[in-house]
Length: 88
Image: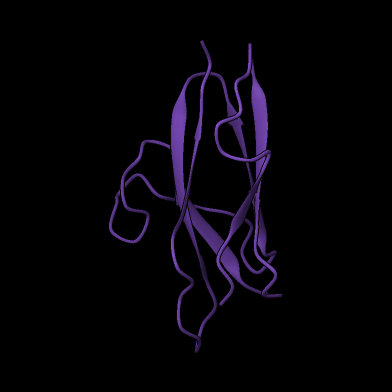
């Protein structure tokens, strides 16, 4: 499964809110992510994006580090991607 990518890119500064889209090019896969910097594969705070939609949307209003991976049944999970956004 292809590693997720973030839009906008990591390091973006924002005020007051920012919408981040996480996508993977692997059709039918599902994004799982955290916005508290914890590992999305083991964290109880992980959130599933739209099941089978190959994307997820996160709305931020504070400085956050997002960690994400993509899952597709019967395939090897993607590598993890990490992105940090700063709200001064």
